[in-house]
Image (cartoon, rainbow, N blue to C red; front, side):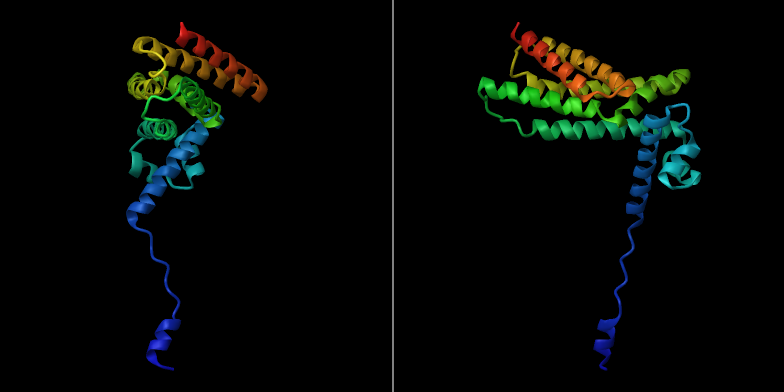
Length: 218
């Protein structure tokens, strides 16, 4: 058999993943492990051992990527908020840059509310509440968590105004409606945690939409 043929018959080795790819995967696994633990067993029981067990990595890997559990907690907030923004940006990017008909504007903001309800209705959102409440005993970490939420709300406000600003020229009123809506959505999170009831959630969402429509037309 010619040498060229023998070479061609040799099985090709699967290319090894780059170190940066493996590192990124480990980082995401740790964050997802922390998110799952926070949502399922709470902040107090989200230990380093629990996180690494869920992530399928060693404690050394956690220390290598984050240095401490506190660094990981802040990374969880960044990760989860990036998910939220990506979903809302994807919706907002579909909106017409031209001034659409009134009926289309109302359809747009109802669609935006629906995306928000899906986000707040997911079990993983409970992880954020666990962080907010569970870090209160650590003044330094809790201050960092609160600062993160302030910055996050500023980003959400800009997205909200892109959608709702076309319904009212009163920017302050539009922003206030966002905070009211988020407060209602956060309340839905607790209802869902206690006793999930999609029909109840939908009725509450319908009432919320009616209130917003009325407030925007006031």
